[in-house]
Image (cartoon, rainbow, N blue to C red; front, top):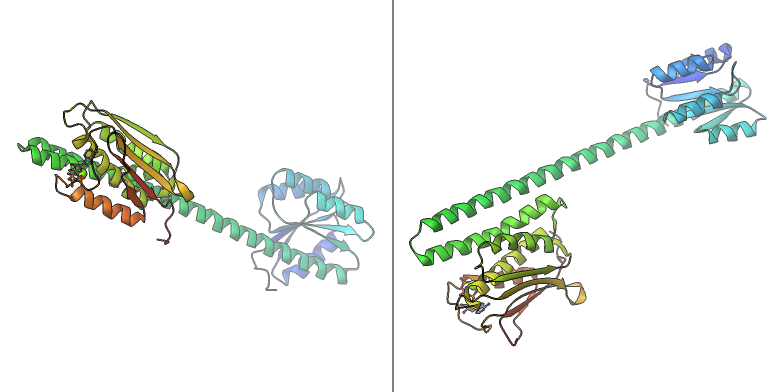
Amino acid sequence: MSDAPTRSRILYIDDDPVLARLIQKALARVGIEVVHAPDATEADRLLLGEKFSAVVLDHYLPSGTGIDILARMRAAGSKVPAIYVTGSSEATVAVAALKAGADDYVIKSATEEFLPLLERSIRQAIVKLELEEARDRADAETHAARARAEMLLSEVHHRVANSLAMVQSLLRLQAQASASEEVRTALAEAQGRIGAVAAVHRSLYLGNEGRQVELGTYLRTMLSDFTATLPSEVRLEVATVPVHIGADRAVCLGVVVSELVTNAAKYAWPGGTGGRLSVTLAEGRDGKGRLVVADDGIGSSPLSESRGTGLGRRLMRAMVDQLGGTVEQPDTARGTTVVIEFETECETVG
Ligand SMILES: Nc1ncnc2c1ncn2[C@@H]1O[C@H](COP(=O)(O)OP(=O)(O)OP(=O)(O)O)[C@@H](O)[C@H]1O
Ligand SMILES: [Mg+2]
């Protein structure tokens, strides 16, 4: 075992000045400073005002016992290692001392045996205390670093969301300034797509769960931005169950939902009649997620030619592929229903 560091200071509580002197000399040789308290009053005073690496308590003191001092120390929350010194025939005292919070006890016998035992016990106590303190410091540092990182990350998400909101309003201004209906529509769709990305950053900022988002909450946030742009005749209904998913995957699904909702708004009710549009997030088979976007409009075929740019369909395909998911458009009596199934966990770590 290595030598105890020279800064170690212990408190020795005993009314025997000769033994105290002996211990002071013996321990000074191994770099341990011994402060002597001859009674409880002096011991309490020193313990209150100074920091010790360990405390050694003798049992019989002028008034009361070492156990009384030890009990007071522990009641006050002190964690300083305590070594109790008892006479050779006092097993019950040793047990009582351990119960009162002593870390070890040493039997006071002939000094040539007693001193090395006491020294070893003190060294062990000091090493243990230092290890515990080092562990507490490391824990506190890890904790603080984590809290800082989380705060920073949350701040970054907040800023990204704000910046994207600014990009959206720039597009809105540009749309308002344009005389062409086609340009206005294109810019409005671009706003929707950016909104799907922005909403995930807002969820991450509010959720504070690192890189995971609750998909239902995210979709609701995203769709609430959409309702403002939907014709007033369209009733949007959203139903979700809690699904935790990586942020990147949530953005993919957000873009898909954005495309499907935009399509319904554009094509499902050509006469401007409007109707019911629903977005439902549920648990699918085998722990998969199941997202259904359905409207009660004129209906469409999965093979319908794109009347627009074709970008919507390409985006959707790319997003679903990235998720390793599937898209289906089942036959329905009315309207269009699109079902997306996706893994909620990523197979590859990244
Ligand atoms: N909910 C719907 N109701 C009725 N028709 C739809 C619906 N969704 C899609 N369609 C039809 O399917 C076609 C293909 O949709 P798709 O999203 O691929 O292209 P788009 O919306 O026309 O253009 P963009 O590439 O800009 O999204 C649309 O042009 C439309 O005719
Ligand atoms: Mg489209």
